[in-house]
Length: 284
Ligand code: OGA
Ligand code: MN
Picture (cartoon, rainbow, N blue to C red):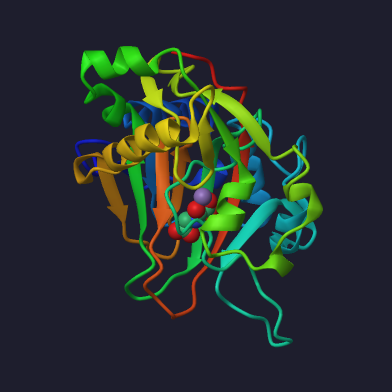
């Protein structure tokens, strides 16, 4: 069932732990057909099951490439492919995950030369209400630009840098950060308009969370153009707002969407994310 005109498909009555090749191909094609967002209901996924399902999309962070050091404390002990997103604390007072993860519009890991392709987020415990996640279709956003703006953006590149989120989002404390966040590993240049390798669609690939500037422009020029694009790419008609239920597995394509976690709750929230590694994005 479609979830919104811009993006998203809801899939129910499937068990991801018992999915043959044809079943997986069908989910992948529904996901691509829905501009890179699928909500799969009622899944009981152990960390092992989530990892093996995720691996069907491609290699994972935590296996081939690794997340930066400052993310390491949030990985599930013994499961380097599972990133815990949570505001909960253990009985000993330790964080059970990254609190306030992604409270700005972003595309996961866009600051790496090989960024994230799919992210798979499994809800284990969610507030009764609040703690929604917003997803914006960057394919719909690109398609809505005038031909003149599309032409202007076509040859441009943008620099993405984890430093932007670390220093401006207000959601990282100095103690959360590590020298390798700033050593160049977490900084990359990508085209502003990318071609989706599976669907062929063009998508905008900039985000206020991690994009630092447009290459070759003066800082004010870059800021003016990016400011316009940030307003454009988050217009409400490109957005689907997901209200979580425990058991949801939401799969988004970071090459076709940006997302934002709404910080409007205090009740316990605990989710597991696995993250598939993409090839360097290609210019459209
Ligand atoms: C993420 C993220 C959103 C949320 O896990 O990549 O941005 O709602 N989380 O927790
Ligand atoms: Mn994210």
